[in-house]
Length: 183
Image (cartoon, rainbow, N blue to C red):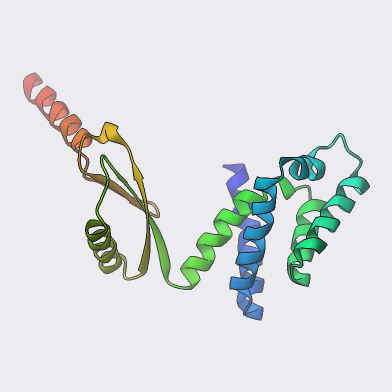
């Protein structure tokens, strides 16, 4: 929980700056690019986060990579601040929260849809349209499969979960029958 609070605080601060200077989308791309480098180069991540290396050496590595990425002055300052405050290890989480904040700013919401089997493009489009109507926002749907659901789908939009899986329906039916037997 504490990590999420830290991540949200820094992401919101960057969002405020992005809104103010109209560069929120640019910062989204730059921050995402930095996280992509971390994901591809595990040695780089270790070099900037491992306290066994001297602070100045870690800072030098960070500065070199930031310069190679060619990010804006604002993003350089932001990443330097994360490093100085010993929060650079939270950059992935900050990126996730920031991506969501930028999407919200643009009226976009992401939905995670898990189904037992593969969904046709037509079904995915119907789900997207239905969720758009329900939320009043543009919806980007991420599809995953989980055969343990038996059938149906589970949809998560923000904090809301719509569980239409057969697995859950059977579980609910089982609980109802148990309660009925005790009465």
